[in-house]
Length: 98
Image (tube, rainbow, N blue to C red; front, side, top):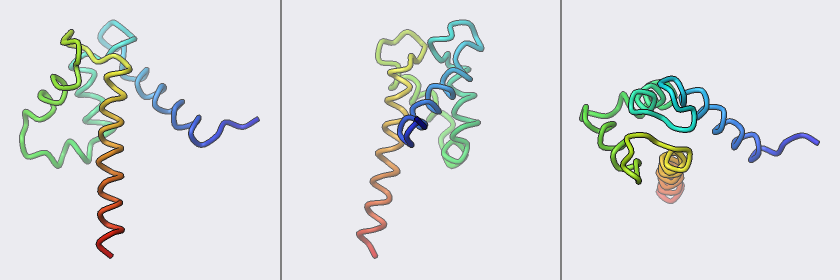
């Protein structure tokens, strides 16, 4: 049986996290450097649109719920979820303004 669209999306999120995690050691977390590499590559449009150079540092601090200087997969998913909600809200606003 072929994976569903949702299952493929989950597999993609796992693969992307694994691609960046572990470059600096622990393959279960993103270090700050790995997080910045992820943001600058995978979310480059978002990153380039930021006027404030400190925004990624603040995002990392806010996402790092246990303050260990790393993002585990759950903390990473909070980022993805927040971006997905923002995109959804933007689409809903656009459809209501027509």
